[in-house]
Figure 1 (cartoon, one colour):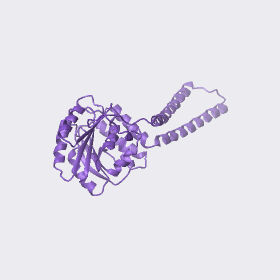
Figure 2 (figure 1 turned 90 degrees about the vertical axis):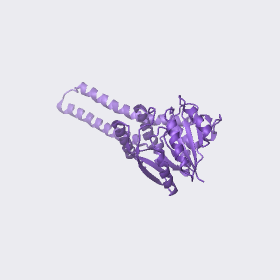
Figure 3 (figure 1 turned 135 degrees about the vertical axis):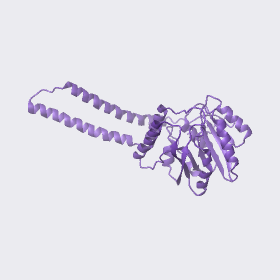
Figure 4 (figure 1 turned 60 degrees about the vertical axis):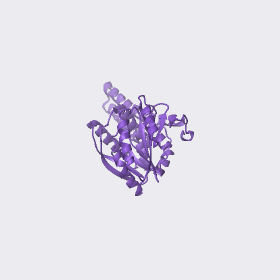
Length: 318
């Protein structure tokens, strides 16, 4: 019998866990031809998330959990889930039930047909502002324009991955992670399932606009070096324009025999080009910062507890 691991990163999800467990339990109890593992990754929650998970494990042997030593972020929680998963395939889903677990049987059907990556594509996003919908849509378009790898648009982390996709992702140990880009990069045979995304079942979202902007920057800079090339495209014409303008001013002074004036215009030009330089330095700095973080070679995460045992899988740390 094939085994399916459902990976659920959780951070302060005390309010939503009872609804989540009820729906997942009802679903997997109705599927007889698979063995299931429900793997929670507690990302340093400060509420009673880990206590609830432990209660569920006591009464349901299909429950497993990884308890982080502190909050490392959702992206790190996802790779930890892959490291500890024991199934022939894994399914990522959030704890807030915005992604309906009732799509899992359809995902399994396409997996049995030979697809390695069955991802859920959002047709609509209930309970979200127009600004968030618009910025999310534009982010995927911008990311696609910067790379030659096909990016799945309007797609989150809710997906099924075959064992060989899991093994490929386990090898990718960079500390600045963007799983959505990685899912596209590894390739393999993909299949989309279109669905309508529900609002959160309970609690509050952990993603504010600041975190979303950081995630977008991580996604772009970890997946492509195009911003560096764009900075070159900006720098070259800027230098040429500045040089031509300089020649024009000198030539005008020589022909008309007038002294260089208009200091205000010159100051404005200096400020403008200084701003361009600062922007370009910022882009380069982002990449240098990533190189610095990767060269430290620190473990991606530290585990406080795995299924009640205070131990760590050291072979997954690097």
